[in-house]
Image 1 (cartoon, helix red, strand yellow):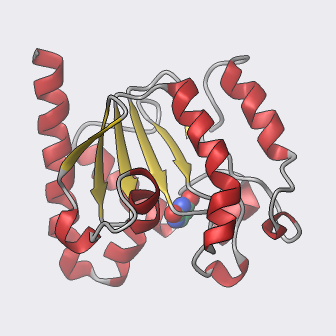
Image 2 (cartoon, rainbow, N blue to C red; image 1 turned 90 degrees about the vertical axis):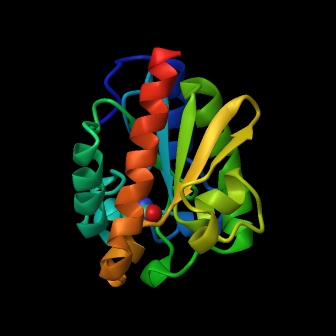
Image 3 (cartoon, rainbow, N blue to C red; image 1 turned 120 degrees about the vertical axis):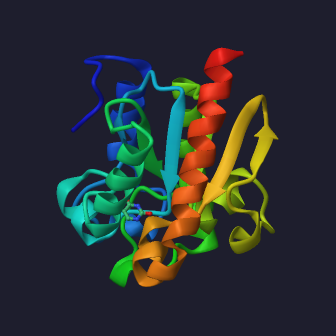
Amino acid sequence: MVDQLPKTDLQDLRQECLECRQCPLCEARTHVVFGAGNPQADLLFVGEGPGQNEDLQGEPFVGKAGQLLDKMLAAIDLDREKIYITNVIKCRPPQNRDPLPEEQAACMPWLRQQIEKIAPKVIVCLGRYAAMQLIKPDIRITKEHGIFFERDGRTLMATLHPAALLRNPSQKPQGFEDFLKLEQFLKAQKEA
Ligand code: URA
């Protein structure tokens, strides 16, 4: 699935991003994974970075973690047509290692511009990399997941990364609880 609108500012940004050579991750990538979903969504999900499947397909969250994310979205009556999904870094690090600070720094301007153009009301950070970049650098995700923060007029919440939930299934209820809090929050916003 690519962006649902044919030609928008976001499409122009995507074209630019697909040619990015700001850091060495461009050398080994198959695809830049810019993001996917509804560019007019009020809700943006931000993960860490592409894994092997995402690199091969050029789409975010298409592997096992993505399948779990889809289930969690469905549990609160959301799907990928209703949200936008992207990552902190747009190119796969070798062997799926953690993104280096300099790679994140090189890539953040893309995410910042995506946020500006999509203008979501709520951003959900999937895992600590997105949370450290968008909420606060010293966030402790195990303690501060499910809490709503305000940044630049938007609401942000961090939740446990779906890949972490697959590694530690005992934490899945905590992840689902965060999604239920999100559902409540969105409902309250609609009613306000
Ligand atoms: N993990 C992420 O953080 N992002 C993806 O796109 C896939 C897996």
